Length: 285
Image 1 (cartoon, rainbow, N blue to C red):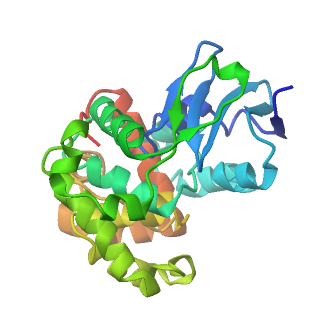
Image 2: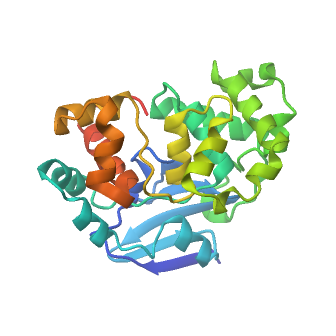
């Protein structure tokens, strides 16, 4: 019998397509059953919704999925706070079902290093190869039709590699950053072992010590791994959107989002990103 978790949701504020395709994660793929299949912390699961029910097939870890999908947060209230003008209203309407996932710290860092100056199909392909070559095969139930899935590689595994060893995943210039970051996290283990309890600024500064990690990636990790919703990942595309839609220059963005979006600036960024990505304004992560 397949393991399964079932949760009550409000479909007005939960949409798996929008959650998995808004640029925050890269290991989810559509399956033949109308849902998505993904690997999360060494578990392969199928996720689908029917009405106001969320089904997670392949796992019995209810607390894990409540946290991962941020199921206890009131996104209705968040939307009301963020609907500050017509721009945000149209973006929220388009991405009404987005929720911020709480993902593994190490996986999030490496995924967004790989995402640098890259598009989503290629990011997914690189991460898939990365896991196939250096992760461990995960035992899956019969409902996954014999397809092989792999865990995200361990920090220790990657730290012991040389740059040339990553050639098969075709990550290009990102190879050295992946290995250097793994080595530095191990070297500074005492700084990172309890990082989830640090303040936003302390986490931000620690992340900036990692090779290949700048302000955007640091904010992505704050938002998508530590659920620090004040974090606002800012890149060339977001800067262009802020200028064209709000009349805000690059230098004014940080001050503007604090004033307008406050504690939910990162969620506002996801609504903006999703809307303009779907309208083919954004071509890279």
